[in-house]
Length: 175
Image (cartoon, rainbow, N blue to C red):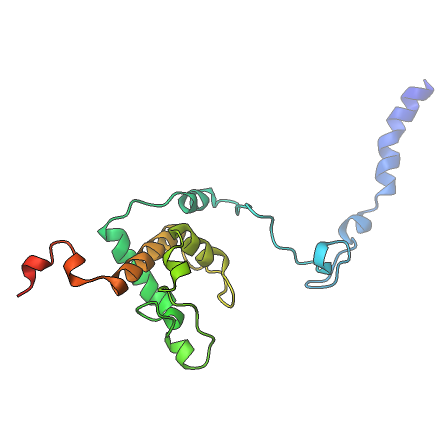
């Protein structure tokens, strides 16, 4: 009997301990405030590596798998590169864009040996996460467009060192 009475009264006791006000007003950190609990001492934390935003699983899959290289992808890459990348990187990828001419630190030329040897994934990752003074473009450039830009960067790299004799099918069109 006592046990049944105790079990019946237990929920009422638990609810009495939680007043409505204490549930709504809880301790919290101020935005961008100090938080000694977290690494770095800041309350604003970067999401863990590999985090995918809710509803963005398709975007993560697009980012993981490079699309098929074709003329349409290169045309899209050229259009997106010219719209997004040329202010810093310039039209040829030499790192001489308009903002550089106005005093911004120049990005590296795509003709540097280390960038010529870099896989396309490297450029996609830099567009996604940023590098040096370049901030991330993940929220500005769709994953498929990042791959398109990377393909166009590779085309720029190949075009800067190409000899006319090495271009397939061009010899028959020259005088």
